[in-house]
Image 1 (cartoon, rainbow, N blue to C red):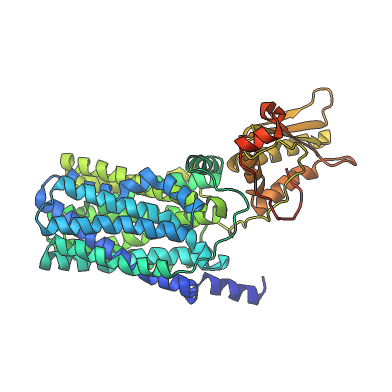
Image 2: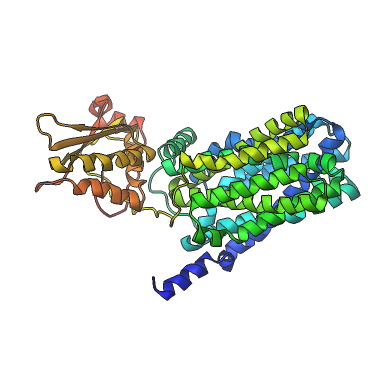
Length: 561
């Protein structure tokens, strides 16, 4: 590698590189204020709950109420982010969160708040943030060049954790001085800068060559892509387990401050601030960690460091020692979550980026939400110290998951491939909703290459299925062993056109590897057939009356299956 590419890589990898782009910089600063408000509200909500009840599980449920919506509506939120203008989706979702924060402020002001109402409105705020997350995160790639995307992801983590560093401390002061109502009001006000910046963003939208998917089909497409993408499944599994085990820190922090350190709201805020400061340190070093360690090694190191830090929090009774342990825990947590996030962002193509990030958010939030409930119940039964020690032991054991689900290698983002021209169609009654469509591709492969070809086709299967195909099979002719037939279905003609144009550049290269096994003077033979051709024999006028007409795809480039 020459010196110039090295310098270019380091410049792109620099943590401040994305801030050179004005739109990212403005949104980042506004999101910092929004995150600050959310953390101030979280302090107010958790402390208000400790004042209304002594039940540990209800205190932990505040965290669950804020995080559970992410798990419940993440995939619809991701589908909406991929289907519609992400700027508009972000504005609507922030409006929902603002409404919840405003209602929480008003009810607290009039003394009408109770544990049930507090949890309900935290759930509303969490729902707005859950809808906002995929639209915001998947739009980052539209704000910065691809080479600075990992740094932009890390900066977004820093934004939240700068807020975590100062927000809880500020929240503790605000709650101590003016009560929880002031914390709720601060959150409502701090949503406004982000709403204004997003409203003023002149987002450039790319023209859609094909009609938009329906929401239910878009959700199915997202789930299908993830289930047929082994690297993303591994990352999501590891993310969920990390949230499930490591969520004890944030869920039990109010009880650590109250029962182990015998402090008040200020102590609680300072402890959360220490965790956030550690997270900022971790995010600032994400580039260095990625250069020096593999993904698996980095995640293992983070788990071991965090497990030790949680154990120290459990046994410490000195605020200084607890804060130091929380700095280590925060850095480890941030590094692990950032590695998971970058892994998903760089593995998913643009058409499914929102849904993939929604699945990531659902994994981390679902782990935290379920874990918080469990840690609260364990604390009621055995105490804070026992619950944290249990969490520490489990966290130290999580590197064993790498024996079965090793973190995939994280490289550059796989770019979307060029749109293909539509295949030739002579059936005049073919419409977007005609289907199911059956595709058969015949390859003639030398018998000595049979094993290698079959191995490549297993990867082709996953590629076809995650982009929209079903019922995939590969068959070998028993009378002509050189003849292989790949066969798969798509629900409709329109779904086939989507499936055909979704593969990334590396997937197109994979398909070409399969074609390269084909021998003989003739190209591979492709058949596209209607499995239920009843509609194709109706009159053309009746067919057009019953179906929409596909737009013409004005695109060039290549033939593919």
